[in-house]
Amino acid sequence: MLFAGVTLVILFYLVSLSIRIGRQSTGDEAQKADVIIVMGAAEYSGKPSPVLRARLDHALELWKEQMAPLVMTTGGPGGDPIFTEAAVGRSYLMDRGVPPTAIITESEGETTMYSISAAAEIMTRMNLRTCILVSDGYHIFRAKRMMQYEGIRVYGSPRQASHQSGKREWGLYFRQAVGYALWKVGITV
Image (cartoon, rainbow, N blue to C red; front, top):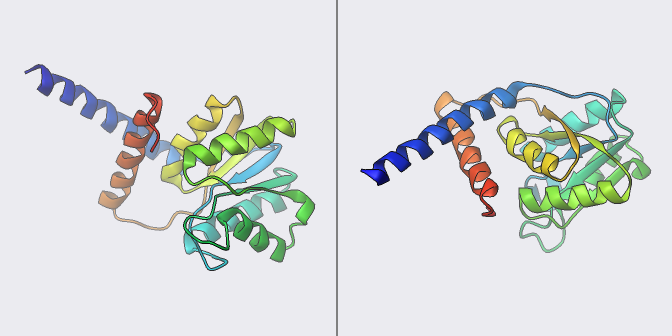
């Protein structure tokens, strides 16, 4: 009976957290900041995946709107022996007119937590205190909370959403809720 009660409480917490993640996923909080941080995603032999490209395009628009003078690309090699997600993002932005001096790279992170921690460390060293965090909507809540934990003021700005079925979308929210809950208790995923 106790096990069933605990399970029910955990399930209720994860469902309510999924609802909060869903709400955060569509809200654009972008405002003037020190840097725009683009969360990494897959790259294919030096070319950004459609997901990474959409994130970079959104960051590029924010940069053109002068929301921040700097853009930080994140993400490690992800199994690629030659390219990192961050370096691919940097090249993509440079090809579209962002000067190299306006781009910072965090090319070691292989997980959200690792990339966030490294990005926060870079920001601290550079005396940057605020950021616009660009990722997929379902990812913003968890990444934003991790960055806030590092002492950074964060404004979430999800990329243009791809249309997904409600079931798939809620599955993504629930997965992020589980990841966030595990992070809160000290388990890295």
